[in-house]
Image (tube, rainbow, N blue to C red):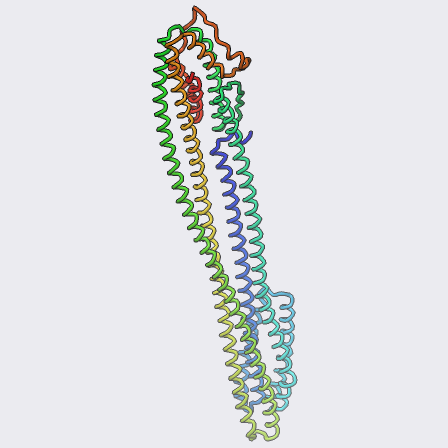
Length: 570
């Protein structure tokens, strides 16, 4: 089975359907990959943000716990020490809850190692805190301060360093998710380019083979028509396939066989011409028929020109629409670029917030260091002056002020973390807008493709119209020449029967039939006495018209009529 076994419309439908199917595959693949990349990015950022939040809560609770522990070492009143101990237990509860939530999240090997180190150090801090509380209950403030300064504070510094490493890992993870998302977008573009190239190659293949399946048989039909117009009826028309061009070739074959039979009948009837008056009457009748046929051809020419004009206008309108859609697609692409720029700005804002968090953490570290020194000074002062020492009260006041500053810094950390989460949400919304914008671009491109299809169809109609005009003009020219020949024939028939018969034989000799040469065809036919009456020119014209109407396409009708005109000229 070949392409010519299908109708032209079916072939064109298969070609364009294949291209549309590939475009659908490209669009569906792009949307699926884009959705997966976006889901992975959002999930990763949410996980990193949750880890960052829990680690920050651990850090804040640890700092509050350290302040409360130092206050216990500085207090001389048992009631106040119990209040500070309650604060330690409350902050410790918050610390343990944040650490438990962080442990339940998906952690990397490095994060698990850091969390294990923190848990181990926390156990040492608990043991040291119990020892310090034993010293306090024994009213040994100096011993409690020593335990806090020499054991608890270094352990807290170690824990703080590990927590800061956890926070740094979360920043690295967020950046890694962004890098992976950009790499996935690059892979998506590569896939789209590959699929687009495949669509172009398949479209080119369909265009070449479908065009050849149409133009090759049409060229063969044109060659047969040209030979018939030149008077050569020896062509062998081979019909292949079941499409419209095959029907045209079958009509040309039938027309050629009909012409051969007609010319043979005319040659056999040249010796039956007996009465010049009958020939003159036949010529006049044929001349009238020529005039009617010419008028019909002129009407067809006018109709074809109207269709051609309408098609040209339609092409112009479609071209303008295609231009407008191209402008619209360009505008949508610019909008997509702006959205991407906004995403970049939002990510920059997140980075700025991260820098501020680092600065505030530095302030908290400085405050913690100063608080440690003041606590040591307070312990020394208390040791010297006892419970009536005035310096103890001043140092305790300074410790409280530093504790307030630490609390303020912790609040700022929380605010900045919340701001970072909001900016991440804004980035997600911008990514959604970018996806919608790309959808608009795809829709515009699809509309452009549809309009270009209409332009192609209009161009085909224009080509057919031009072909009909050319055929009508050729018919007009042939009919004009034939009318002049008929007038000359009518005048010559009045002079001599022999001359008319000779002219008829010479005219028929231009047709070349199988099994004879041009020289044989030019010989005059012998006159037979008992012969059947020769068919008139008008009768021959009617028979050729009936044969042409038996064809399967309008072009076959026109070619058959033209072949009849070639005979009627003589």
